Image (cartoon, rainbow, N blue to C red; front, side, top):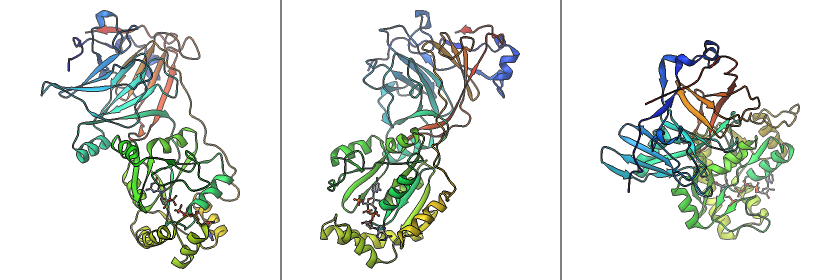
Length: 433
Ligand SMILES: Nc1ncnc2c1ncn2[C@@H]1O[C@H](COP(=O)(O)OP(=O)(O)OP(=O)(O)O)[C@@H](O)[C@H]1O
Ligand SMILES: Nc1nc2c(ncn2[C@@H]2O[C@H](COP(=O)(O)O)[C@@H](O)[C@H]2O)c(=O)[nH]1
């Protein structure tokens, strides 16, 4: 593989002295002695490239050096494919094609790249507010864990979102105990508050089941490939079929401002417990094995062989569910109405609660032309054309000090603030090399 043209060490960086004291004070808590450069470009700034943004038809790549590795990001620009990642290992003197985990950002006209502690912040040029901020994780606990487990060089994408979603709810229990029934009741009573995580499964659909609503019904080979690509938060072989929760299934619910409910087996619950997803874990238990068998038989959706298999598995599941320490709450589903009331109580939904959707995220438009610099936990985005609601506001401060989550899910807790810098006396930017 050929290294893409000459690497220049030129970069734009914020001249701290050029900041007016009032602007400095608005970027609260920032230590201005620590000016730091963003990633440099794969080509020379002399050609007119600015911090990741290049003219049309030019290569749209940035390069970020971390230790003895150079992360070259970008390249594909047809806006139907994904932003690519290549690594040049300077120690070995060769290119490495990493395994890229997580949901990849769609290619764009260009981007800025800023090195944070263990990840690279990517701001996409001309992208919509819900798609302009991404993180390429290079040395986070998730990436390290994946590298160790798979014995590969990995990186992982995570989309940045403003705001913080409420903790998802994981509901487990043996087949036929009533998980689906309880979840349906909750979603019917509070439709704007809860959203269901639609799992993938390799089992065949039942009569009334719709693809994309009850499950994503999937071929085993397709699901196995997607598991290898890191698209699943958890997966397990349950009663002879593969089931799994994709990262996207959970994040789609959170993106809609709803609280996510996962209906998964005990193996899946254990995996989610070990993941970076902070959730509430509820185990539903039946009054007796006899009653469980009756419910499964009365439901009439399984063959005799499947019923017997599910009942055999139920014994082990109940044992693990009630003793493993995975679950925060045990729910006894004897009388359905009573069980539902108890579920609502433990979710803090007593009779007085009125269904309110979670407040939607505050959006900010990034202008197409901008320059990014980094100071401690803050990225300073200097807007060259106005994308902000007021012409006079030409500086955006992105505070990344309170990030949470991350690959394989979203990175939450972004905090954007538009600053009226010209009227506050910001003189300009220095270009240094
Ligand atoms: N408390 C209850 N008393 C009597 N029947 C119940 C009760 N709760 C649920 N049922 C019935 O038991 C059957 C199984 O319930 P449901 O399909 O919700 O179970 P599940 O735990 O979601 O099963 P699976 O894991 O196989 O999807 C359904 O026919 C439902 O109507
Ligand atoms: N680990 C996971 N388990 C899942 C998931 N989706 C459903 N399930 C569990 O499978 C059984 C059987 O479900 P059925 O629809 O075939 O009756 C049940 O216990 C579900 O909780 C998943 O994504 N991951």
